[in-house]
Length: 114
Length: 111
Image 1 (cartoon, rainbow over the protein chains, first blue to last red):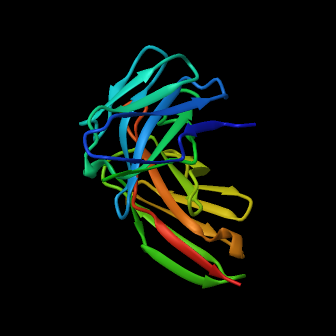
Image 2 (image 1 turned 180 degrees about the vertical axis):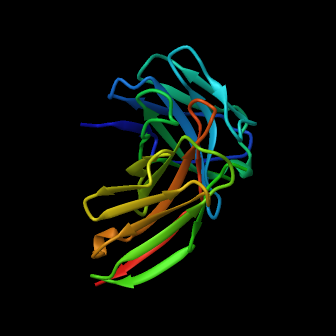
């Protein structure tokens, strides 16, 4: 039972490079989320998708784009990476609106921007 | 901000003792959730309490919610070394899909 799978687990980029973080869930959940976790800051929502075909900005969307490819997959793209984007990125999913349902998390992508 | 704030930031106890963590928030909520995060892993949902509930139990966990004081507490009874983790509260508000996480309490349980 995989749950939420994130790839890659680790990545080092140079400033200005681009990359896409992948996320897939096998629980048939409607809603998916991308968070970043920085020391002392808790989790901050970057983007979320309440259902297939819709995406909305969270607290910290600048510098990121997302694609809800299908019901299973939700990707996060950094077009031009900056050192301030060094963080641990978590993808999550929930069955319905997050405010009423538990969210299920992947194990994260640890991203370093040099 | 709607973000919850946990207290204390860090808690260190011996196995067998009880651990209590608190969460305070600022705006009205629909529900409050508690999550656990082991080192290097993602968050795991522990328990959800709705705004019209006052107390909820799950195994060794007991959660209380006081909406008049805008606060919640998580009690872990008879702690084990395996309970060592960070614990986060998250509040669900009026915006669909949004959960607001606090900065967490780091719990260390010594054998």
